[in-house]
Image (tube, rainbow over all chains, first blue to last red; front, side, top):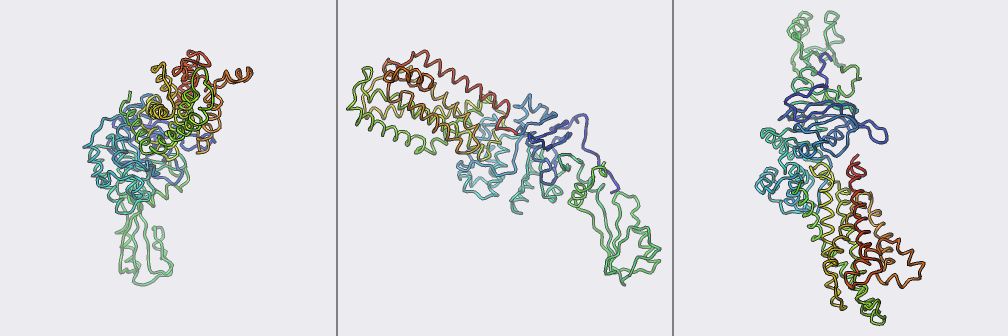
Length: 326
Length: 253
Protein backbone atom coordinates (compact mmCIF):
# COMPACT_ATOMS: atom_id res chain seq x y z
CA UNK A 1 0.00 0.00 0.00
CA UNK A 2 1.51 3.28 -1.05
CA UNK A 3 0.05 5.80 1.37
CA UNK A 4 0.33 5.72 5.13
CA UNK A 5 -2.56 6.98 7.23
CA UNK A 6 -1.86 9.20 10.17
CA UNK A 7 -1.48 7.25 13.38
CA UNK A 8 -4.03 7.76 16.11
CA UNK A 9 -1.81 9.37 18.68
CA UNK A 10 -2.28 12.96 19.67
CA UNK A 11 -0.17 14.11 22.57
CA UNK A 12 -2.20 17.25 23.22
CA UNK A 13 -5.97 17.62 23.37
CA UNK A 14 -7.41 19.34 20.33
CA UNK A 15 -9.59 22.34 21.17
CA UNK A 16 -12.63 20.94 19.42
CA UNK A 17 -12.47 17.59 21.26
CA UNK A 18 -15.58 16.68 23.22
CA UNK A 19 -14.04 13.43 24.43
CA UNK A 20 -10.33 13.27 24.98
CA UNK A 21 -8.63 9.93 25.69
CA UNK A 22 -5.02 9.90 26.88
CA UNK A 23 -2.95 6.77 27.40
CA UNK A 24 -5.92 4.62 28.31
CA UNK A 25 -5.11 0.97 28.84
CA UNK A 26 -7.02 -1.90 30.36
CA UNK A 27 -5.62 -5.14 31.70
CA UNK A 28 -8.16 -7.54 33.18
CA UNK A 29 -7.48 -9.57 36.33
CA UNK A 30 -6.44 -12.65 34.39
CA UNK A 31 -3.72 -10.59 32.71
CA UNK A 32 -5.50 -10.12 29.39
CA UNK A 33 -4.56 -6.73 27.94
CA UNK A 34 -7.77 -5.54 26.30
CA UNK A 35 -6.54 -2.01 25.50
CA UNK A 36 -3.03 -0.71 24.97
CA UNK A 37 -2.38 2.98 25.52
CA UNK A 38 -5.21 4.46 23.51
CA UNK A 39 -4.96 8.15 22.55
CA UNK A 40 -7.91 9.63 20.76
CA UNK A 41 -9.73 12.93 20.45
CA UNK A 42 -13.37 12.77 19.44
CA UNK A 43 -14.38 16.00 17.77
CA UNK A 44 -17.47 17.88 18.79
CA UNK A 45 -20.35 17.22 16.42
CA UNK A 46 -18.76 14.44 14.38
CA UNK A 47 -19.80 10.87 13.70
CA UNK A 48 -16.89 8.61 14.49
CA UNK A 49 -17.09 4.94 13.57
CA UNK A 50 -14.90 2.51 15.46
CA UNK A 51 -14.23 -0.58 13.43
CA UNK A 52 -12.56 -3.72 14.60
CA UNK A 53 -12.93 -7.47 14.68
CA UNK A 54 -14.57 -9.26 17.63
CA UNK A 55 -12.56 -8.85 20.82
CA UNK A 56 -10.59 -5.90 19.43
CA UNK A 57 -11.42 -3.73 22.46
CA UNK A 58 -14.12 -1.45 21.03
CA UNK A 59 -16.70 -2.21 23.73
CA UNK A 60 -14.07 -2.06 26.49
CA UNK A 61 -13.09 1.44 25.35
CA UNK A 62 -16.70 2.62 25.26
CA UNK A 63 -17.40 1.01 28.65
CA UNK A 64 -14.45 2.82 30.20
CA UNK A 65 -15.58 6.19 28.83
CA UNK A 66 -19.10 5.60 30.15
CA UNK A 67 -17.95 4.51 33.62
CA UNK A 68 -18.90 0.84 33.42
CA UNK A 69 -15.34 -0.47 33.37
CA UNK A 70 -12.38 0.99 35.28
CA UNK A 71 -9.34 1.87 33.19
CA UNK A 72 -6.00 0.45 34.31
CA UNK A 73 -4.08 3.48 33.04
CA UNK A 74 -4.72 6.86 31.48
CA UNK A 75 -7.25 9.66 31.73
CA UNK A 76 -10.40 10.63 29.87
CA UNK A 77 -12.35 13.85 29.77
CA UNK A 78 -15.87 14.18 28.46
CA UNK A 79 -17.20 17.64 27.67
CA UNK A 80 -14.18 19.00 29.53
CA UNK A 81 -14.78 16.97 32.71
CA UNK A 82 -12.58 14.18 34.02
CA UNK A 83 -14.69 11.00 34.01
CA UNK A 84 -13.41 9.92 37.43
CA UNK A 85 -12.89 13.12 39.43
CA UNK A 86 -15.84 14.98 37.94
CA UNK A 87 -17.96 11.97 37.04
CA UNK A 88 -21.33 13.69 37.52
CA UNK A 89 -20.77 16.34 34.86
CA UNK A 90 -18.95 13.92 32.56
CA UNK A 91 -21.63 11.23 32.69
CA UNK A 92 -24.47 13.72 32.35
CA UNK A 93 -23.04 14.60 28.93
CA UNK A 94 -22.96 10.98 27.75
CA UNK A 95 -25.64 8.62 26.49
CA UNK A 96 -24.96 4.93 25.90
CA UNK A 97 -26.74 2.33 23.82
CA UNK A 98 -25.02 -0.94 24.70
CA UNK A 99 -24.60 -3.83 22.33
CA UNK A 100 -26.80 -6.28 24.25
CA UNK A 101 -30.55 -5.73 24.55
CA UNK A 102 -30.72 -5.05 28.27
CA UNK A 103 -34.21 -3.87 29.12
CA UNK A 104 -36.59 -3.88 32.06
CA UNK A 105 -38.99 -6.39 30.59
CA UNK A 106 -41.95 -5.59 32.86
CA UNK A 107 -41.73 -1.81 32.52
CA UNK A 108 -43.66 0.20 29.95
CA UNK A 109 -41.77 2.10 27.27
CA UNK A 110 -42.67 5.52 28.64
CA UNK A 111 -41.93 4.69 32.27
CA UNK A 112 -38.50 3.33 31.40
CA UNK A 113 -37.72 6.58 29.59
CA UNK A 114 -38.88 8.61 32.60
CA UNK A 115 -36.60 6.46 34.76
CA UNK A 116 -33.60 7.06 32.50
CA UNK A 117 -34.13 10.81 32.41
CA UNK A 118 -34.50 11.03 36.18
CA UNK A 119 -31.48 8.80 36.80
CA UNK A 120 -29.33 11.22 34.85
CA UNK A 121 -30.49 14.06 37.04
CA UNK A 122 -32.90 15.75 34.66
CA UNK A 123 -36.34 17.04 35.72
CA UNK A 124 -39.40 15.56 33.99
CA UNK A 125 -39.90 16.78 30.42
CA UNK A 126 -42.88 14.95 28.87
CA UNK A 127 -42.66 16.88 25.58
CA UNK A 128 -39.05 15.85 25.05
CA UNK A 129 -39.83 12.21 25.73
CA UNK A 130 -42.78 12.39 23.35
CA UNK A 131 -40.50 13.80 20.63
CA UNK A 132 -38.02 10.98 21.07
CA UNK A 133 -40.73 8.35 21.00
CA UNK A 134 -42.31 9.84 17.88
CA UNK A 135 -38.91 10.15 16.21
CA UNK A 136 -38.27 6.46 16.84
CA UNK A 137 -41.81 5.40 15.89
CA UNK A 138 -42.46 4.24 19.45
CA UNK A 139 -45.19 6.66 20.47
CA UNK A 140 -47.95 4.14 19.76
CA UNK A 141 -46.13 1.62 21.92
CA UNK A 142 -45.50 3.98 24.85
CA UNK A 143 -47.78 2.10 27.23
CA UNK A 144 -46.71 -1.37 26.11
CA UNK A 145 -44.53 -3.48 28.33
CA UNK A 146 -41.07 -3.82 26.85
CA UNK A 147 -41.30 -7.62 26.95
CA UNK A 148 -44.07 -7.48 24.34
CA UNK A 149 -41.91 -5.64 21.78
CA UNK A 150 -39.90 -7.13 18.94
CA UNK A 151 -36.09 -7.12 18.99
CA UNK A 152 -35.94 -4.13 16.66
CA UNK A 153 -38.39 -2.19 18.82
CA UNK A 154 -36.36 -3.01 21.92
CA UNK A 155 -33.28 -1.64 20.17
CA UNK A 156 -35.21 1.59 19.54
CA UNK A 157 -36.26 1.71 23.19
CA UNK A 158 -32.62 1.49 24.21
CA UNK A 159 -31.75 4.36 21.91
CA UNK A 160 -34.68 6.35 23.31
CA UNK A 161 -33.45 5.71 26.86
CA UNK A 162 -29.98 6.92 25.95
CA UNK A 163 -31.45 10.12 24.48
CA UNK A 164 -33.87 10.78 27.34
CA UNK A 165 -31.44 13.04 29.23
CA UNK A 166 -30.38 15.02 26.12
CA UNK A 167 -26.74 13.88 25.99
CA UNK A 168 -24.10 15.78 24.06
CA UNK A 169 -22.29 12.57 23.17
CA UNK A 170 -24.04 9.37 22.13
CA UNK A 171 -22.27 6.02 22.09
CA UNK A 172 -23.90 3.39 19.90
CA UNK A 173 -22.30 0.00 20.44
CA UNK A 174 -23.21 -2.17 17.45
CA UNK A 175 -26.56 -0.39 16.86
CA UNK A 176 -27.46 -2.53 13.88
CA UNK A 177 -26.92 -5.90 15.51
CA UNK A 178 -30.04 -7.99 14.91
CA UNK A 179 -31.86 -5.17 13.16
CA UNK A 180 -33.54 -5.55 9.78
CA UNK A 181 -32.54 -3.47 6.77
CA UNK A 182 -35.47 -1.05 7.00
CA UNK A 183 -34.88 -0.29 10.65
CA UNK A 184 -31.17 0.06 10.03
CA UNK A 185 -31.83 2.74 7.42
CA UNK A 186 -34.31 4.48 9.76
CA UNK A 187 -31.65 4.46 12.41
CA UNK A 188 -29.07 5.94 10.08
CA UNK A 189 -31.45 8.77 9.30
CA UNK A 190 -32.06 9.35 12.98
CA UNK A 191 -28.33 9.41 13.66
CA UNK A 192 -27.85 12.00 10.93
CA UNK A 193 -30.61 14.17 12.39
CA UNK A 194 -28.98 13.88 15.81
CA UNK A 195 -25.68 14.99 14.37
CA UNK A 196 -27.41 17.92 12.69
CA UNK A 197 -28.79 18.91 16.09
CA UNK A 198 -25.22 19.00 17.44
CA UNK A 199 -24.90 15.60 19.09
CA UNK A 200 -21.55 13.87 18.74
CA UNK A 201 -21.94 10.22 17.82
CA UNK A 202 -19.52 7.37 18.28
CA UNK A 203 -20.58 4.05 16.88
CA UNK A 204 -18.95 0.69 16.79
CA UNK A 205 -20.04 -1.58 14.03
CA UNK A 206 -19.35 -4.78 12.17
CA UNK A 207 -21.20 -3.42 9.18
CA UNK A 208 -18.56 -1.62 7.16
CA UNK A 209 -21.39 -0.32 4.99
CA UNK A 210 -22.73 1.47 8.06
CA UNK A 211 -19.45 3.23 8.71
CA UNK A 212 -19.04 4.04 5.01
CA UNK A 213 -22.56 5.44 4.88
CA UNK A 214 -22.53 7.53 8.04
CA UNK A 215 -19.14 8.27 9.54
CA UNK A 216 -17.11 11.43 9.17
CA UNK A 217 -14.06 9.69 10.58
CA UNK A 218 -13.07 6.08 10.92
CA UNK A 219 -11.07 4.57 13.74
CA UNK A 220 -9.77 1.05 13.46
CA UNK A 221 -9.07 -0.96 16.61
CA UNK A 222 -7.31 -4.29 16.49
CA UNK A 223 -5.97 -6.36 19.38
CA UNK A 224 -6.42 -3.47 21.80
CA UNK A 225 -4.60 -0.93 19.67
CA UNK A 226 -6.02 1.99 17.79
CA UNK A 227 -4.37 1.35 14.45
CA UNK A 228 -5.52 4.56 12.86
CA UNK A 229 -8.13 7.25 12.99
CA UNK A 230 -8.70 9.14 9.80
CA UNK A 231 -11.21 11.16 7.86
CA UNK A 232 -13.31 8.65 5.93
CA UNK A 233 -12.74 10.16 2.48
CA UNK A 234 -9.03 10.70 3.13
CA UNK A 235 -8.71 7.12 4.31
CA UNK A 236 -10.41 5.72 1.25
CA UNK A 237 -8.32 7.93 -0.99
CA UNK A 238 -5.06 7.06 0.77
CA UNK A 239 -5.58 3.36 1.15
CA UNK A 240 -7.94 2.69 -1.70
CA UNK A 241 -6.94 1.04 -4.96
CA UNK A 242 -8.52 1.46 -8.37
CA UNK A 243 -8.69 -1.18 -11.02
CA UNK A 244 -9.36 -0.94 -14.73
CA UNK A 245 -10.73 -4.13 -16.27
CA UNK A 246 -10.45 -4.59 -20.02
CA UNK A 247 -12.45 -7.26 -21.87
CA UNK A 248 -10.23 -8.25 -24.81
CA UNK A 249 -11.39 -8.76 -28.42
CA UNK A 250 -9.12 -11.75 -28.71
CA UNK A 251 -7.79 -13.96 -25.96
CA UNK A 252 -4.10 -13.83 -25.08
CA UNK A 253 -1.74 -16.52 -23.76
CA UNK A 254 0.51 -14.14 -21.90
CA UNK A 255 1.18 -10.45 -21.37
CA UNK A 256 3.57 -9.22 -24.10
CA UNK A 257 7.12 -8.51 -22.83
CA UNK A 258 6.76 -4.92 -24.04
CA UNK A 259 4.11 -4.31 -21.37
CA UNK A 260 6.18 -5.71 -18.51
CA UNK A 261 6.56 -3.31 -15.61
CA UNK A 262 2.91 -2.26 -15.70
CA UNK A 263 0.59 -3.52 -12.94
CA UNK A 264 -1.21 -5.84 -15.32
CA UNK A 265 -2.80 -9.21 -14.63
CA UNK A 266 -4.20 -11.57 -17.22
CA UNK A 267 -7.19 -13.71 -16.31
CA UNK A 268 -6.75 -17.48 -16.53
CA UNK A 269 -8.99 -17.69 -19.62
CA UNK A 270 -6.90 -14.98 -21.27
CA UNK A 271 -9.96 -12.84 -22.02
CA UNK A 272 -9.51 -10.08 -19.44
CA UNK A 273 -6.70 -7.75 -18.47
CA UNK A 274 -6.78 -6.06 -15.09
CA UNK A 275 -4.75 -2.91 -14.48
CA UNK A 276 -4.28 -1.80 -10.85
CA UNK A 277 -3.32 1.76 -10.05
CA UNK A 278 -2.95 4.00 -7.05
CA UNK A 279 -5.73 6.54 -6.52
CA UNK A 280 -3.25 9.04 -5.03
CA UNK A 281 -0.90 9.07 -8.00
CA UNK A 282 -0.93 12.19 -10.06
CA UNK A 283 -0.35 10.07 -13.13
CA UNK A 284 -2.45 6.93 -13.21
CA UNK A 285 -1.06 5.94 -16.58
CA UNK A 286 -4.39 4.96 -18.13
CA UNK A 287 -3.84 7.02 -21.31
CA UNK A 288 -0.35 5.63 -21.70
CA UNK A 289 -1.60 2.09 -21.06
CA UNK A 290 -4.29 2.36 -23.72
CA UNK A 291 -1.78 3.78 -26.21
CA UNK A 292 0.71 0.99 -25.57
CA UNK A 293 -2.02 -1.65 -25.84
CA UNK A 294 -2.80 -0.17 -29.29
CA UNK A 295 0.86 -0.30 -30.24
CA UNK A 296 0.90 -4.03 -29.40
CA UNK A 297 -2.25 -4.59 -31.41
CA UNK A 298 -4.35 -5.47 -28.38
CA UNK A 299 -7.94 -4.42 -28.92
CA UNK A 300 -10.64 -4.46 -26.27
CA UNK A 301 -14.41 -4.50 -26.54
CA UNK A 302 -15.29 -3.15 -23.09
CA UNK A 303 -13.66 -1.53 -20.08
CA UNK A 304 -14.77 -0.71 -16.58
CA UNK A 305 -13.14 0.76 -13.50
CA UNK A 306 -13.74 -0.06 -9.82
CA UNK A 307 -12.32 1.12 -6.50
CA UNK A 308 -11.78 -0.66 -3.20
CA UNK A 309 -14.48 -0.38 -0.58
CA UNK A 310 -13.93 0.52 3.06
CA UNK A 311 -14.41 -3.15 3.79
CA UNK A 312 -11.43 -4.10 1.69
CA UNK A 313 -9.37 -1.35 3.31
CA UNK A 314 -10.43 -2.54 6.76
CA UNK A 315 -9.59 -6.17 6.05
CA UNK A 316 -6.19 -5.23 4.66
CA UNK A 317 -5.48 -3.06 7.72
CA UNK A 318 -6.31 -5.61 10.40
CA UNK A 319 -4.45 -8.37 8.61
CA UNK A 320 -1.38 -6.33 7.87
CA UNK A 321 1.68 -6.85 10.10
CA UNK A 322 2.12 -4.01 12.62
CA UNK A 323 5.37 -2.71 11.08
CA UNK A 324 3.76 -2.27 7.69
CA UNK A 325 1.21 0.24 8.98
CA UNK A 326 3.49 2.77 10.51
CA UNK B 1 -27.18 15.66 45.24
CA UNK B 2 -28.97 14.01 42.31
CA UNK B 3 -32.49 14.24 43.74
CA UNK B 4 -34.07 13.29 40.40
CA UNK B 5 -31.88 10.20 40.30
CA UNK B 6 -32.89 9.12 43.81
CA UNK B 7 -36.54 9.72 42.99
CA UNK B 8 -36.26 7.71 39.76
CA UNK B 9 -34.77 4.70 41.53
CA UNK B 10 -37.24 4.93 44.42
CA UNK B 11 -40.25 5.16 42.12
CA UNK B 12 -38.97 2.35 39.93
CA UNK B 13 -38.58 0.08 42.94
CA UNK B 14 -41.93 1.01 44.46
CA UNK B 15 -43.59 0.35 41.10
CA UNK B 16 -42.01 -3.11 41.16
CA UNK B 17 -43.52 -3.62 44.62
CA UNK B 18 -46.99 -2.67 43.49
CA UNK B 19 -46.67 -4.88 40.40
CA UNK B 20 -46.05 -7.85 42.69
CA UNK B 21 -48.52 -7.13 45.48
CA UNK B 22 -49.42 -10.79 45.94
CA UNK B 23 -45.81 -11.77 46.48
CA UNK B 24 -44.61 -8.74 48.36
CA UNK B 25 -47.54 -7.89 50.62
CA UNK B 26 -50.33 -10.49 50.52
CA UNK B 27 -48.06 -13.50 50.96
CA UNK B 28 -46.26 -12.35 54.14
CA UNK B 29 -49.50 -11.05 55.63
CA UNK B 30 -51.16 -14.43 55.00
CA UNK B 31 -48.28 -16.43 56.46
CA UNK B 32 -48.17 -14.19 59.53
CA UNK B 33 -51.93 -14.56 59.94
CA UNK B 34 -51.45 -18.34 59.99
CA UNK B 35 -48.88 -17.92 62.77
CA UNK B 36 -51.42 -15.88 64.74
CA UNK B 37 -54.12 -18.49 64.21
CA UNK B 38 -51.89 -21.41 65.24
CA UNK B 39 -49.70 -19.86 67.95
CA UNK B 40 -51.90 -17.01 69.03
CA UNK B 41 -55.50 -18.20 68.93
CA UNK B 42 -55.18 -22.04 69.00
CA UNK B 43 -52.08 -22.89 71.06
CA UNK B 44 -51.74 -19.48 72.72
CA UNK B 45 -55.08 -19.80 74.49
CA UNK B 46 -53.75 -22.88 76.32
CA UNK B 47 -50.49 -21.19 77.34
CA UNK B 48 -49.96 -18.96 80.34
CA UNK B 49 -48.96 -15.29 80.21
CA UNK B 50 -45.32 -14.39 79.70
CA UNK B 51 -44.09 -11.45 81.78
CA UNK B 52 -47.70 -10.49 82.34
CA UNK B 53 -48.56 -10.50 78.64
CA UNK B 54 -50.85 -13.01 76.92
CA UNK B 55 -48.92 -15.37 74.65
CA UNK B 56 -50.81 -14.14 71.58
CA UNK B 57 -49.79 -10.54 72.27
CA UNK B 58 -46.28 -11.61 73.32
CA UNK B 59 -45.42 -13.09 69.93
CA UNK B 60 -46.63 -10.08 67.88
CA UNK B 61 -43.29 -8.19 67.93
CA UNK B 62 -41.39 -11.39 67.11
CA UNK B 63 -43.70 -12.27 64.24
CA UNK B 64 -43.46 -8.77 62.80
CA UNK B 65 -39.67 -8.97 63.06
CA UNK B 66 -39.70 -12.38 61.40
CA UNK B 67 -41.49 -10.95 58.35
CA UNK B 68 -39.68 -7.63 58.47
CA UNK B 69 -36.18 -9.11 58.38
CA UNK B 70 -37.00 -11.59 55.63
CA UNK B 71 -38.84 -9.09 53.46
CA UNK B 72 -36.31 -6.27 53.96
CA UNK B 73 -33.48 -8.54 52.86
CA UNK B 74 -35.48 -10.05 50.02
CA UNK B 75 -36.73 -6.71 48.63
CA UNK B 76 -33.41 -4.97 48.69
CA UNK B 77 -31.38 -7.91 47.44
CA UNK B 78 -33.75 -8.53 44.52
CA UNK B 79 -33.88 -4.81 43.80
CA UNK B 80 -30.16 -4.59 42.99
CA UNK B 81 -29.63 -8.19 41.88
CA UNK B 82 -32.23 -8.06 39.10
CA UNK B 83 -30.48 -5.23 37.17
CA UNK B 84 -27.25 -7.18 37.51
CA UNK B 85 -28.91 -10.33 36.25
CA UNK B 86 -30.81 -8.60 33.42
CA UNK B 87 -27.83 -6.45 32.44
CA UNK B 88 -29.68 -3.16 32.99
CA UNK B 89 -27.12 -2.30 35.70
CA UNK B 90 -25.13 -0.63 32.90
CA UNK B 91 -27.46 2.34 33.13
CA UNK B 92 -26.96 2.76 36.86
CA UNK B 93 -23.18 2.47 36.53
CA UNK B 94 -23.03 5.02 33.72
CA UNK B 95 -25.38 7.51 35.43
CA UNK B 96 -24.27 10.55 37.41
CA UNK B 97 -25.36 9.08 40.74
CA UNK B 98 -23.19 8.57 43.82
CA UNK B 99 -23.18 5.42 45.95
CA UNK B 100 -25.19 7.10 48.69
CA UNK B 101 -27.85 8.22 46.19
CA UNK B 102 -28.10 4.67 44.87
CA UNK B 103 -28.44 3.40 48.44
CA UNK B 104 -31.11 5.96 49.34
CA UNK B 105 -33.12 4.98 46.25
CA UNK B 106 -32.91 1.21 46.52
CA UNK B 107 -32.72 0.78 50.30
CA UNK B 108 -35.25 3.55 50.88
CA UNK B 109 -37.78 1.77 48.66
CA UNK B 110 -37.13 -1.63 50.23
CA UNK B 111 -37.40 -0.19 53.74
CA UNK B 112 -40.62 1.71 52.85
CA UNK B 113 -42.17 -1.51 51.71
CA UNK B 114 -41.06 -3.30 54.88
CA UNK B 115 -42.50 -0.58 57.11
CA UNK B 116 -45.80 -0.81 55.21
CA UNK B 117 -45.74 -4.55 55.66
CA UNK B 118 -44.97 -4.31 59.37
CA UNK B 119 -47.87 -1.92 59.93
CA UNK B 120 -50.15 -4.16 57.88
CA UNK B 121 -49.23 -7.17 60.00
CA UNK B 122 -49.87 -5.09 63.10
CA UNK B 123 -53.36 -4.27 61.84
CA UNK B 124 -53.94 -7.92 60.88
CA UNK B 125 -52.89 -9.03 64.39
CA UNK B 126 -55.73 -6.97 65.83
CA UNK B 127 -58.19 -9.42 64.24
CA UNK B 128 -56.70 -12.32 66.21
CA UNK B 129 -55.40 -11.01 69.53
CA UNK B 130 -55.73 -8.00 71.80
CA UNK B 131 -52.56 -6.00 72.34
CA UNK B 132 -51.45 -2.56 73.31
CA UNK B 133 -48.43 -0.48 72.35
CA UNK B 134 -46.93 1.32 75.34
CA UNK B 135 -44.38 3.33 73.35
CA UNK B 136 -45.80 3.86 69.84
CA UNK B 137 -43.06 6.27 68.75
CA UNK B 138 -40.32 3.88 69.84
CA UNK B 139 -42.23 1.08 68.13
CA UNK B 140 -42.30 3.01 64.87
CA UNK B 141 -38.68 4.02 65.33
CA UNK B 142 -37.60 0.41 65.75
CA UNK B 143 -39.72 -0.59 62.78
CA UNK B 144 -38.00 1.98 60.56
CA UNK B 145 -34.51 1.36 61.94
CA UNK B 146 -34.78 -2.41 61.52
CA UNK B 147 -36.26 -2.06 58.04
CA UNK B 148 -33.47 0.27 56.89
CA UNK B 149 -30.70 -1.80 58.49
CA UNK B 150 -31.82 -5.10 57.06
CA UNK B 151 -32.65 -3.60 53.69
CA UNK B 152 -29.07 -2.37 53.65
CA UNK B 153 -27.92 -5.86 54.58
CA UNK B 154 -30.08 -7.28 51.77
CA UNK B 155 -28.60 -4.72 49.37
CA UNK B 156 -25.15 -6.08 50.18
CA UNK B 157 -26.35 -9.63 49.55
CA UNK B 158 -27.76 -8.51 46.19
CA UNK B 159 -24.43 -6.92 45.25
CA UNK B 160 -22.51 -10.00 46.37
CA UNK B 161 -24.77 -12.65 44.80
CA UNK B 162 -24.03 -13.86 41.32
CA UNK B 163 -26.79 -16.45 41.15
CA UNK B 164 -30.27 -16.90 42.56
CA UNK B 165 -29.14 -19.52 45.08
CA UNK B 166 -26.78 -17.09 46.77
CA UNK B 167 -29.62 -14.61 46.92
CA UNK B 168 -31.70 -17.04 48.97
CA UNK B 169 -29.09 -18.75 51.06
CA UNK B 170 -28.47 -16.03 53.68
CA UNK B 171 -32.16 -15.27 54.39
CA UNK B 172 -33.08 -18.96 54.54
CA UNK B 173 -30.03 -20.46 56.20
CA UNK B 174 -29.00 -17.63 58.52
CA UNK B 175 -31.71 -15.03 59.14
CA UNK B 176 -34.71 -17.34 59.62
CA UNK B 177 -32.96 -19.60 62.17
CA UNK B 178 -31.57 -16.58 64.02
CA UNK B 179 -35.06 -15.06 64.20
CA UNK B 180 -36.67 -18.27 65.44
CA UNK B 181 -33.89 -18.64 68.05
CA UNK B 182 -33.88 -14.92 68.84
CA UNK B 183 -36.94 -14.92 71.06
CA UNK B 184 -39.70 -14.51 68.48
CA UNK B 185 -41.83 -17.13 70.25
CA UNK B 186 -40.35 -17.10 73.77
CA UNK B 187 -38.54 -14.91 76.25
CA UNK B 188 -34.88 -15.76 76.52
CA UNK B 189 -35.39 -15.76 80.31
CA UNK B 190 -37.20 -19.06 79.75
CA UNK B 191 -33.93 -20.67 78.59
CA UNK B 192 -31.38 -22.38 80.87
CA UNK B 193 -28.66 -19.90 82.01
CA UNK B 194 -26.03 -21.30 79.64
CA UNK B 195 -28.26 -20.89 76.53
CA UNK B 196 -29.29 -17.42 77.70
CA UNK B 197 -25.65 -16.41 77.41
CA UNK B 198 -25.23 -18.14 74.05
CA UNK B 199 -28.35 -16.41 72.76
CA UNK B 200 -26.84 -12.99 73.44
CA UNK B 201 -24.49 -13.61 70.50
CA UNK B 202 -27.55 -13.65 68.25
CA UNK B 203 -28.03 -10.08 66.95
CA UNK B 204 -31.73 -10.66 66.29
CA UNK B 205 -32.29 -11.00 70.05
CA UNK B 206 -31.61 -7.28 70.42
CA UNK B 207 -34.02 -6.35 67.64
CA UNK B 208 -36.89 -8.43 68.98
CA UNK B 209 -36.22 -7.45 72.57
CA UNK B 210 -36.18 -3.75 71.78
CA UNK B 211 -39.24 -3.98 69.60
CA UNK B 212 -41.11 -5.99 72.24
CA UNK B 213 -40.18 -3.38 74.86
CA UNK B 214 -41.98 -0.74 72.79
CA UNK B 215 -45.14 -2.88 73.05
CA UNK B 216 -45.03 -4.21 76.62
CA UNK B 217 -42.40 -2.17 78.41
CA UNK B 218 -40.48 -5.38 79.20
CA UNK B 219 -37.31 -6.49 77.47
CA UNK B 220 -34.71 -9.26 77.62
CA UNK B 221 -31.92 -6.71 77.16
CA UNK B 222 -31.84 -2.99 77.84
CA UNK B 223 -33.51 -0.81 75.21
CA UNK B 224 -30.36 1.30 74.77
CA UNK B 225 -28.34 -1.83 74.02
CA UNK B 226 -30.95 -2.92 71.47
CA UNK B 227 -30.95 0.45 69.71
CA UNK B 228 -27.14 0.68 69.87
CA UNK B 229 -26.61 -2.79 68.40
CA UNK B 230 -29.02 -2.10 65.54
CA UNK B 231 -27.40 1.26 64.77
CA UNK B 232 -23.97 -0.35 64.90
CA UNK B 233 -25.04 -3.00 62.40
CA UNK B 234 -26.47 -0.27 60.15
CA UNK B 235 -23.16 1.60 60.17
CA UNK B 236 -21.20 -1.57 59.38
CA UNK B 237 -23.53 -2.26 56.42
CA UNK B 238 -23.13 1.33 55.18
CA UNK B 239 -19.36 1.03 55.33
CA UNK B 240 -19.45 -2.21 53.33
CA UNK B 241 -21.68 -0.69 50.62
CA UNK B 242 -19.39 2.35 50.43
CA UNK B 243 -16.39 0.07 49.95
CA UNK B 244 -18.16 -2.00 47.26
CA UNK B 245 -19.00 1.08 45.20
CA UNK B 246 -15.58 2.62 45.74
CA UNK B 247 -13.70 -0.50 44.71
CA UNK B 248 -16.18 -1.62 42.07
CA UNK B 249 -16.16 -5.14 43.58
CA UNK B 250 -18.70 -7.32 41.74
CA UNK B 251 -19.87 -4.20 39.89
CA UNK B 252 -17.16 -2.85 37.61
CA UNK B 253 -14.60 -4.93 35.74
